[in-house]
Image 1 (cartoon, rainbow, N blue to C red):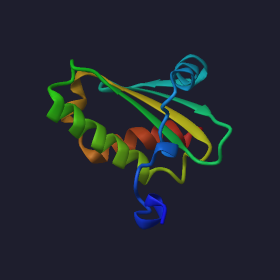
Image 2: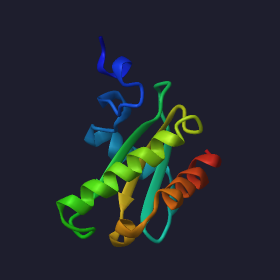
Image 3: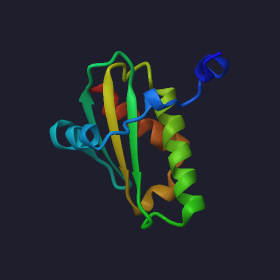
Image 4: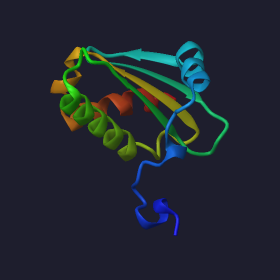
Length: 116
C-alpha cells in the first residue's frame, strides 16, 4: 500500500517543491505577497496538485523552533489545498514567524491563494 493511501493527509515528496530550478522559477516568475513574518510566492504548475516549498533560516530560531514553524506552515497549507490546486507555493519565513498562530498562517494562505 502506498504511504499516502494509508495516511491521506500525509505530506509526500510529490507535495513538495524539491528541485532548485522549480524553487527558483517560483520565486522569480511567481506572484509575491509580503507579510511581516512571511514572504510567499505562488506560480501555476503543470501538475494537477499543489506543491509547497519552505525556507526557514536559522534567524527564525533553533532547530526545534524552525521545525515547529515548518510543521505549522505545512498544516496551514494542507488545510487550504482545495484553493491551491495546480499551484506551486514557496514560503520564506522571517524572524517573526515563530510567534504566528495557525489561524494567522491560514489567513495568509487564504489571502495568497484566494487571488490565484
